[in-house]
Image 1: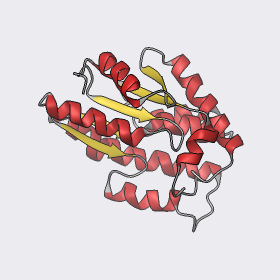
Image 2 (image 1 turned 60 degrees about the vertical axis):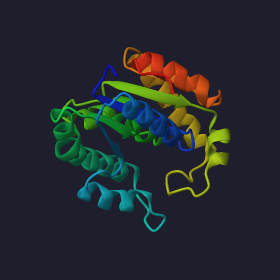
Image 3 (image 1 turned 90 degrees about the vertical axis):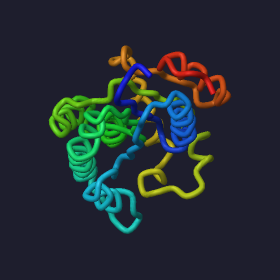
Amino acid sequence: MNCNYLAFEGIDGSGKTTFIEEVSKALVKADIEYSIVREPGGSKLGEGIRELLLSHDYEVDPTSEALLFSASRAQLIEEIVKPTIELGKVVISDRSAYSSVAYQGVGRGLGYKQVYDLNDFAINGFWPEKVILLDIDPKISLSRQKVADRIGSDQVSFFNKVRDGYLQLAEEFSEKFLVLNAENSQQENFNHLSDWLNLERT
């Protein structure tokens, strides 16, 4: 494994959970200690914010949405991610600050740079070292969802914008991003991922 902080990104239904499970198996096989975190959430405070953000019981203004995400993320980085890495463990994150740039910055129209800068401040520049982006047509990914949360139940047009935001990030930070076509076979994609991370293939 050639990094300590790995994030999985993609629109809702792109298959992040499955890939995280496969990486976990490979790390166990390689005798590498790791911890999995999720965003929003991952800390006691973050889980409370997660409920506010994802529940259908609340209407959340886009700016409030961006600020709540960044607050949850700030707590997660300081309370969980940094201490875990300092202990010599690998952190695998289901989403990261890049999500907010795509979802709130581009999807909600708050501004790519504005939301990037907000999150850069919130996490004090502590971005993931490597990012796996599972790219997929929103119509396909949304059809995979069994139960959609407040954000995941938005319109296809919104997720098309989010996808564009992700691809813009992947282009700007190409040295950090591996883009996988989530419509390809899982084994094919995991082989690419394993080679990129210097992991033994499962």
